[in-house]
Image 1 (cartoon, rainbow, N blue to C red):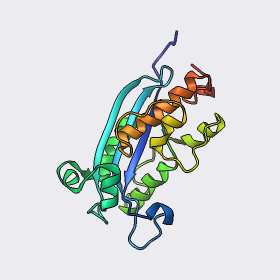
Image 2 (cartoon, one colour):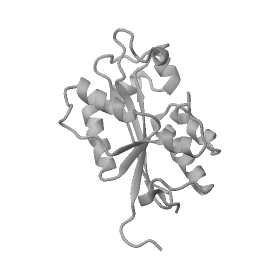
Image 3 (cartoon, helix red, strand yellow):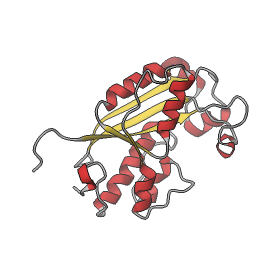
Image 4 (cartoon, one colour):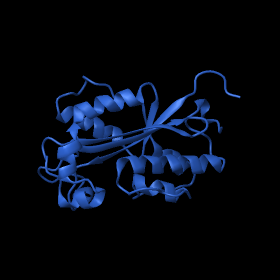
Length: 200
């Protein structure tokens, strides 16, 4: 029986501006930036892996405010939705920090660099903190799951779990990564969310 306050962990995902070929060019073509368009996250009980809370916000990019047809098709997020429900990145980021609170955050890949890049782009570098962060990919690699060339939406299926929802939706993708963690931990992998990585 666990004594004391439950430990929580946050798993999040980002969708950000993209165009046909931008991934291959690594966003090096003129005018292409990785401006956040959506933040999705789940908060889990670190021991039971039960979801205890969820977070999702649409974000209006400033430099490229009109989403490309490519991104609309990929994510299902359109310009009308952004106009109706989107908020400025700093507003969304502050809300995300509040959601994360003292929890350690995980994501597939280096989404921390996307967040820091947006803070820098909008003149907030150093003014707001980044959450304590870990890249999930090395942990999955250590468990024998090869995620090379795969995205957050592929993690659940790679780990033998079921992906639910629309791929490239930030909240669904975050839940997919969480499902991948849960599947591997239930198979006996060490729980990286607990001190010392001891399986629950």
